[in-house]
Image (cartoon, rainbow, N blue to C red; front, side, top):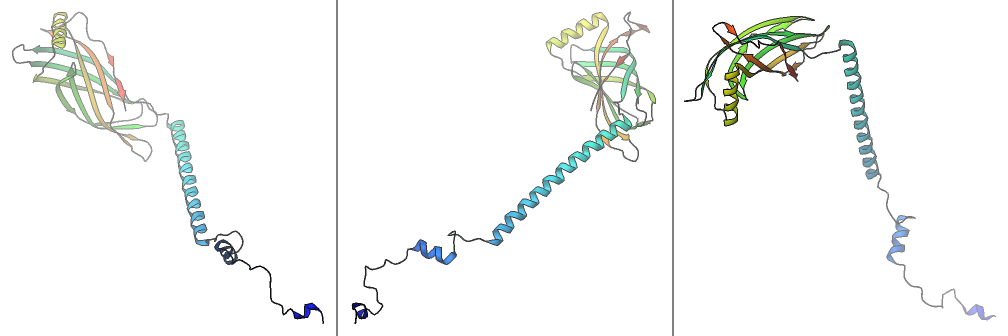
Length: 237
């Protein structure tokens, strides 16, 4: 019998060390050493799809709005309303040196014009303010009206009364010079509330007109030699 017959299958060599935690984890979870969570993957994928969809919707809305504005402009060709002061008569403009009271009598004739061919304008509210060197001394609310395509409307109004107006030294000196010259720098500012009639739509706006006027004094029915010059006013949306 050979010497191999005395061996019973046991291992008589050096001891084998126990498996490490890393290898046990590797054997437990398979190759790669990490778990794959289907729920987390689905959530991240779903969030990405939602954000991508929202972004595409926003881009589509912006493109459609741009196209709509372009089509609107090509069809209607909107132009800003026009406003002129045709005439202004000033029969009193006296600033008291004792109590800074301004006594005034100002009559104004003005024209509203709609230059558009396909857009009507509703003037729902017109607030007219008269100012002298940024100091408002009179205010009037004018009657509203509708202005059709290529139409215009003449409006008359008067500012009569008295108002305390405190001017700085520089502006007071300007008043003295203008009194000697017989021509006053008076601003007329109109605050508007209007609607544009565009087909079935009636968008609302709150623009304003601003007019820088040089108004000669009329004394005893005689107007200053300079006369009043018809003035085009600025429009601001």
